[in-house]
Length: 373
Image 1 (cartoon, rainbow, N blue to C red):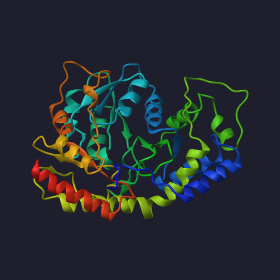
Image 2 (cartoon, rainbow, N blue to C red):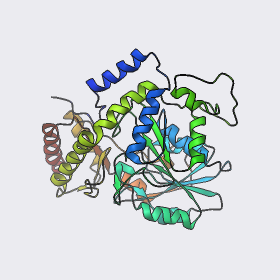
Image 3 (spheres, rainbow, N blue to C red):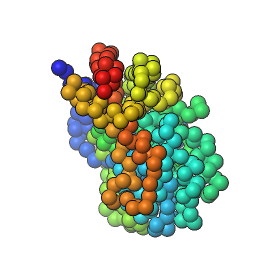
């Protein structure tokens, strides 16, 4: 029986040709391909973009660029990948775990409000499964309490909010381009903002803090006599990564985006009336889903995962709440909504090479088996 993968890097001959071009160019590090990728992303998002080597690096540098006091508190939902929390900690700040809105698994502003202190300086909304939650309310909340907003948009490349692409507006928006995201550069990420001070900081910080090294790298050169004004990191993107990203961006609107939305709509239509399954909103004309999570009710989640595994169908759980991890745990902290929803979540296979036959098989088996449990 064919194995159906949960997620997959969708690359082919065009990406191979792009990599060959970089290899023939004999300059694999950060150079003109990175510059070209940034420029194409800038055209797509209509804002300045700085590429780095991961979404985690993007979040870390975005937070560092705010230049806050050590121990500054960042409001963030617990239901996110650990990378979000690690970026906050790496910047020297404290993640403050917040509840989620069950219907979207995005940050609950009522709970966030209860957790504001005089050290709270940032709210970091996570665009779970491509959904942003109510961004207008989030920015109003930030203005009211004088907070910065750093968006974790790792799941949301291509998503539209009120007729605008995510990344085309907002204070600071961070994307991930790892192997299974809506577009990939192999590994990679980006910081998008209109704040020139943030852009200048990230451009230098990704190159170990070497002042104004970016322009030299774009031209296949490097700085030999230079100055450094702050802690930097080896977070720059390579030409190899950028070459893949350039091709993927060209494929996104007419291929990847459409396929992900069609698959998600079909899942939603065919699973919407099944007992013990609760779905997220059917908003796939504007949301480009990175994953397709559903909720399995009445304690059936783990048994259903086991059955699907026996049928050679991979599933995932996005995510184990961070406030339950040893490194971030506060013994007195409970997030009952997050903990309940986590126990219900299961992610079904979703990627642009998932066929109609694959999806038919998943839905047929899921329908049949959930009734038996």
